[in-house]
Length: 350
Image (cartoon, rainbow, N blue to C red):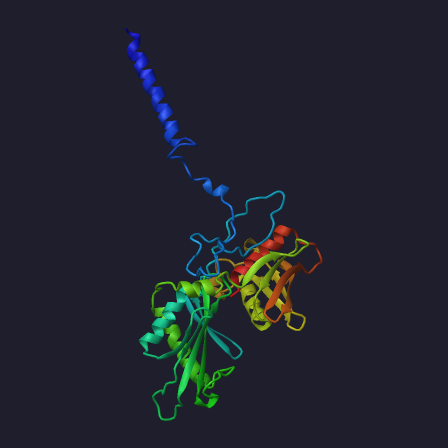
């Protein structure tokens, strides 16, 4: 009889272990599903009969686009953490100009910025003649501005995906009665009136907080950004810019300076920047007393310091430019070096 308590305890332990396996094991009712994503498959979108409207059907967990499409080396070494990709000297709202083109650059995808554009127009009680969320266009009705010398006018606001993901660009077109009643001009009739409206809208966007997202604008306007890191059929890495050449050239020059490259020369006709890259630890900061006896805005760089590169732009078509990097001494660059330099440039293109 002394063995009965021990047998009872042993039976209870076995029962508990069995219950745990039945409830929480790999095949249990409450199993750990933390690794289920490894078995996930990409399925083709559902197809509906023509009579059924499928516009309201959307992916609950859409796979975001990948901007860096390169293959890994056979032996992969974990790289050190990259610096924060956030452009620390960039305001959340900024007015940019290139030649006669002016636009507002703002943090936020088009679907997030679209309701704020509507809010600006509603706040100023501007009557709308056209609202096209699919193409990202809002047009006002004709209005008479205050002032005896001002003509009746109207405005067109157009939002596009920015160069980087999670950014948007807003363009404003102004037309007065001289441009005609029907067609919009290629450029604003009055640059001064366009500038005033751009400044007021930029100030409103800077002061207003993010609001609800327009799902229609978010789905219609590509939000993957216009700069990607890709490989050609020979596994050569390059940057693809979905921009006109003038914009791509100017954006590359600014990105090089922000990425730590020193631009020694450039040849726009040949589409080449002559640059050098100096590692941070190789830069001479001038010592302790430099802050008292000279400018310390930039670290000093000797004429022969760093590695010299060619940054070459290649115009593919009207809206596409590719960017490559080569060593000026002709040495073949390792794949890791090429990707490291191009990723740095890509992160600062805007």
